[in-house]
Length: 318
Ligand SMILES: C[S@@+](CC[C@H](N)C(=O)[O-])C[C@H]1O[C@@H](n2cnc3c(N)ncnc32)[C@H](O)[C@@H]1O
Image 1 (tube, helix red, strand yellow):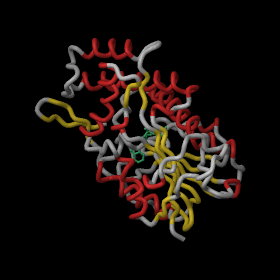
Image 2: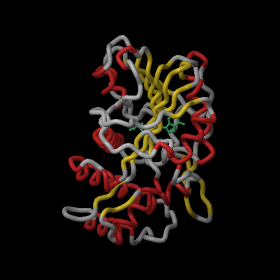
Image 3: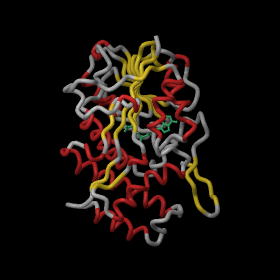
């Protein structure tokens, strides 16, 4: 990650567009294995709450011929999908860095991972190649004015009539339940750092607009209950296909999710302290005490911390 010094304070900066070597992702200061575990637990929480890998709104899923995962990270979604779909479907994962890619020897032959900066130009060999493109969790990566560019680029990769599945959160939805003083302050760091980087803490609210602007029709949530769609569906007026707020998380995932999220926030606090990032809650000197109190309040029997899980599904005009 690159940084600049403003008034003695180091601010994480985005990389130059088109670079295929570095990530714009601010939390990639964690060791690879720690990042991998955190992302995979976070991912499992999404799937367990949603009830599906691919939304049931996508018909004939076993007849798909090509599926892509953008900003794939550890490739966990694509790897799990390869267990469900026939080996004839091409499953292509893309990321700006190969840092978290899985070991090739562990993958099925139809799964591949390659470098791609989704903010840069899309190579023509990927034009209209995919029946489905999946994106999950760019909320800490993209700046407010970059969301539309991603929708435009991804639209180029999808066949007419194909689908975009975009799973995200609003960093502004991060909360401690029940709210206690330091657990709530810690939970707010996601929104704070998102804003500091020029991101939008309520980015999900405009995803449906970016999709409509780039030739997609928004798929409404199911109207009847489906075994592969677990949560209560959101109001169709939001443009969301799925929305799980902290209070509605499946009880079976709450403990693991909260512990994982707390650990990620502790890494963020340590990053902020190391780089002297100004904030109203701690200084580099008091950060250790803040972490201790945060872990106490979010420990056994204490507050649980969450961010909302949101999915938007669009179909590209034929
Ligand atoms: C929060 S992780 C999400 C990973 C994965 N989608 C998941 O759900 O676990 C964000 C990912 O975005 C990738 N990324 C950041 N900037 C990118 C860019 N411009 N183009 C493609 N991937 C990017 C990072 O390398 C990282 O793997």
